[in-house]
Length: 315
Image (cartoon, rainbow, N blue to C red; front, top):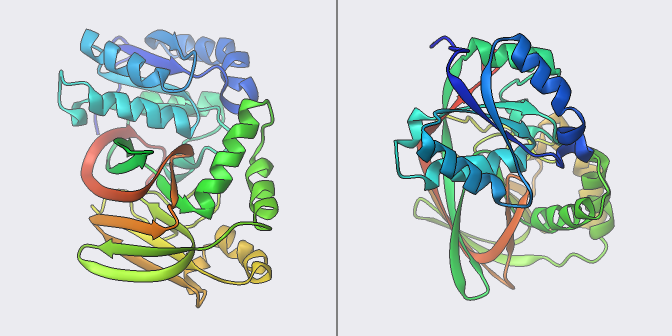
């Protein structure tokens, strides 16, 4: 593993709104620890959604090769998209680290990133790098076809609805991991199932579907495991399809999302594949890494071992 060179300047992308405003509130403390550990760095602050994409792209073109994200999963997603959108150097040559200040921190949980700032910065200094897979998803916003990269989990159907509701409430100032769980319970009352047609590397599957998760990582929603067997560098997506079931049965099965046994349920199917397409009636909506996007038809492709990240203890 390479050794971190604290004399090389790092770009630090800070989301001041992450984690109930912890990004802003704790930045003085975080920057002080970075200085004490002899990091040379340039901080840049996001001002609105998608700003981190442009900040990352612009600064890589200025010469930065090492980036620390101070934020949550959504900020990391934006930084990754900035890395892929720049054209100056190969994506795999950029090193990404994280100091988690978000609400769920599911990507950090997957890679054993400490939540304690001093420990997280010690992890950055050790610079134990890991090459993880990324995914690219193509989807529609109205009639317009768009694309987005992601490095943790995509959700469709009920999961995308819950994320969209949660993000709206966060924008209005409500925060906390429990917010996601609360939206699961309250939105069960009126959610309608969809008929989905899924193709996994040529295999066709048709179901009445409640929700779909497609994972590179295994954690989402603040510690839920909807894709519990996902391996972040195996070149495959893990796909979990939860089929139509009674609402009471869904509530009784929620504990399975936390203890990793969701795949044992008789109305849950799982698959692995490199290329996955999903269509549905009515349209099914999409979120990736906690960011609400568009709707079906949707295409997923794996980009194997393409993103170089700094991990905690052994993954």
